[in-house]
Image (tube, rainbow, N blue to C red; front, side, top):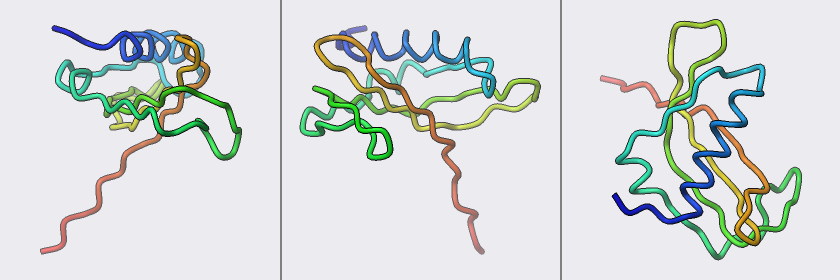
Length: 101
């Protein structure tokens, strides 16, 4: 499986971050999501609320387990990379809209 180096660094950074955060206790990115990760080289700021200059933003869908809860949550993960190092990570719950019939 060929995965770009920035994507590998981001997955590792999320694993470390989740181990330290009080909200989640486990983070999983399925292989197909890693292979389809979007690498955006045009974005130069990682977060508007906390502007961090970056060279690339890597985005992929993942799953995170809320600490102390039995269920998994779909999340959109974003990672900012500058000079080959991860400088910011973000997990946002991905809420699917309800299907109205």
